[in-house]
Length: 242
Image (cartoon, rainbow, N blue to C red; front, side):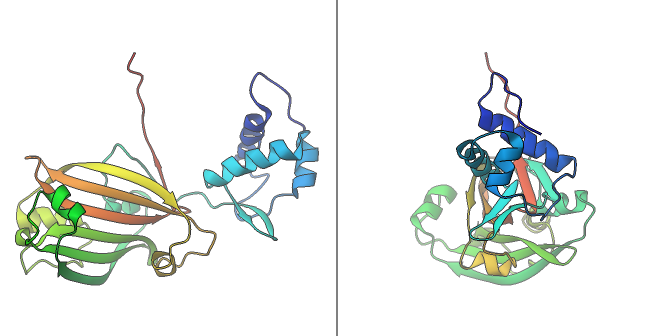
């Protein structure tokens, strides 16, 4: 079972070997891995090399390390999407063969923050509508959504129970979202959001912050979505330019 040396660093070989063993079912989801001492011995590497490999695997959400308990294989994400694709949460859930749902939490108007006035190109006396919802898959909470819009664009008749906010805005305002500028950041336990999503203390979150624009380059929707990292994964296609 030991690692056979090649031109790459040993810890990279360990990462690949453990991923292969997980894919083959040698180590199953939620299963505890052998101790560091035993695993390093099996792979024929030092514990320092193994620890570096485990650190990276933890950052990639392949494993979960619980202090004083051990290291466990993480569950594979149910939903995946290219970050370059502007795909709605509703579509991501539907494409995974699950039933999307919405839990409406609140909606209120607020004075815009400095960031809001910059992103929406609005004045400080314009009102911002803030909508808070939870998206579910087969009834299980998987995404916490905080959406901001200029209140003047949103009719009073709009219902936030509708699943897709993209379709809702297009139907009620006549404005169609065509692209977004996005930022994504992994975080740990969130005091407010993690309990809402029924996350254990070890479950990380992926925060996707997006400013959505219409075809006329009009800023329409600012969304801050907290995805359960054990349920969602995002990837990006990068092309060589020279």
